[in-house]
Length: 204
Ligand code: MD6
Ligand code: FE
Image (cartoon, rainbow, N blue to C red; front, top):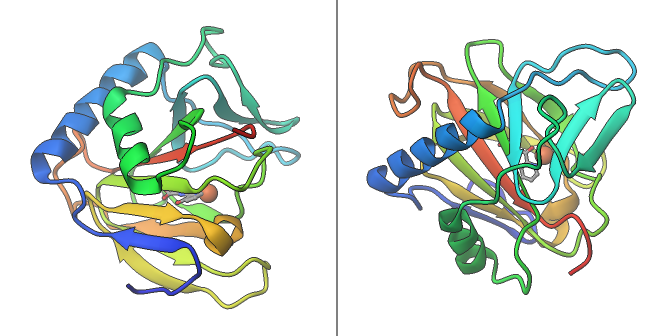
């Protein structure tokens, strides 16, 4: 365990290579229905360096007016596709939470400039459920801090097939992706990293 924060669990190699391949295919099929978008940040309007889409009744979206959860894809206007059964099964096993997730945010990192700044996930109406994080493809350098922005942080490598659970205190800790290591995996067609985060948005 590279980092000891209350409620944080790190399971490298939780998904075997066949399960990883199946999940990538599932995600790419889903992205056929709900295409990846390059959101912009509220205020500045600066684009993120990663592409995002969602599955589930509520999807996380960002635009100039803010961050929020929305029931439909902002480009197509259609509801997000359902969260695939394989992901619901992982959620139930790994979190033991009493209700299913409402959002699976899908992040696609491609190339040396893809990163995600230090942030806390705080657009949800409840923080009592953990967040389940699954990584596929290129290795990421993940940074995890504490509940305050100024708290010390540590970074560690997250490899393909890793599952991480952010419960307890870790649910409200700052975190981000410093960079990915392009070419470290051949799992994602064309290269890159796919990250899935499953969340509750409303109280169960
Ligand atoms: C990523 N993850 O791994 C970005 N958020 O690509 C997150 O931002 C994240 O890993 C909430 C909880 C766990 C996470
Ligand atoms: Fe996050």
